[in-house]
Image 1 (cartoon, rainbow, N blue to C red):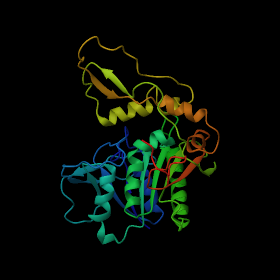
Image 2: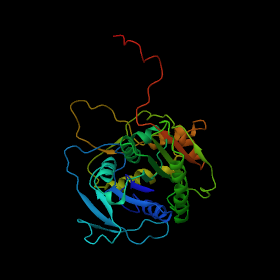
Image 3: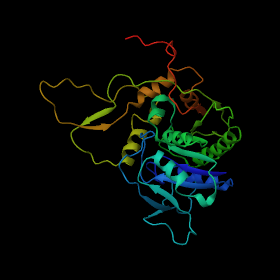
Length: 330
């Protein structure tokens, strides 16, 4: 296959994009042609957005030799190689969805038609609707699907700060098997436009079950997903993503740390108080909804160490009830 690979975490980085190089190498070792178009920096939580009014500019990333199971550092160049005899990924200063558009229509034409778009592997899970609706990983796959391309959003769910290279290698091997099987079994009746695949980073992931799942419908509970701060902390997007995913309220504490991180403040007596706000989503809400759910959904499958595959359509699901075909009463 000719696979276009993108993500929302950017080029290899131990902090925010530790899995992409490993997956690309496994795809190449399996005999696939892999064309890579990534955001030039971390772009999580951005959904299927495009930056209107901004001229997008590419740069060119030349990966270093792969280190077993780990994120490797390459070099970035403002212009492409003149000789064309080196492996080169395209980096775009835009969104994941924009990378899909540019990768499909403006690069890689000499390699032939693109058969499949893979978005990921995401740094962290994209289970349940709260995560999926904001996910840049899902956003890129949806962009590919509305361009009538087969698309898979791939996410790696971790439970520990110890990103064991052996487990990452196993997750990549298992992901290749899932990707190839999905492509061969792609529905011809239009029942699915894309698939969201979540692979847990656990021992024996290759032996654990791979399950068809529904997406768990969940919601934020009371309180804001923004934290009030006194001033700009200066943290980079990569540092913020690591803090969100690996902090006290992150992935590995989903089962034990429940509650709200945001303090509730009273109303000011008069006027507005000048404040800064930092994105600090209450992931405990998500994990609590998973632990309280019944089997059959994506969050529950991953929590139990299994891989989940959720078929999706590129539309908003119609709300249930007696709406369609009736007159709205004012």
